[in-house]
Length: 101
Picture 1: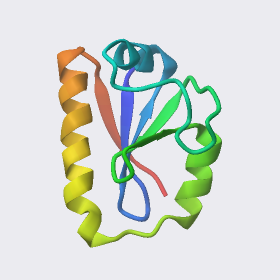
Picture 2 (picture 1 turned 30 degrees about the vertical axis):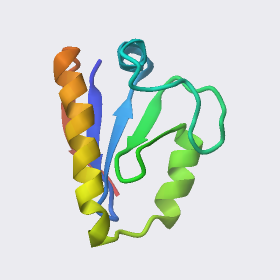
Picture 3 (picture 1 turned 120 degrees about the vertical axis):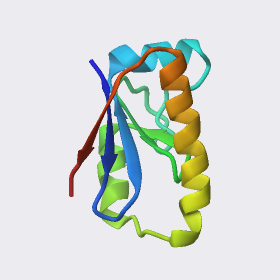
C-alpha cells in the first residue's frame, strides 16, 4: 500500500495515508491517532500540510468543500510537504501522485 499525494481543486496538496502506513509514521512519533478536527480515533488519515493537520475522511471532505487557496500559505505548506516526504523516505513508505477535484 502507498500514500496518495493529491492536489485538490483549490490548489492545496493533501496526503491520503492508509492505516498500514500511518502505523509506521505513528511509531516514529510523526502522527497521533486522533483527527485534529473532531478528535475521533482514525485509521486512514488525510494529512493537510497547509494546516499541518491529520483528519478523518469526514472532516477532510468538509474542509475541502470550504477551503480557499491563499498564496501566502505556500511557504508553510512546502515546509510540511518536505517534512512528511522526508519521513516517508526514511521509513521506506512509497508514494503515488494523483489529482482530484
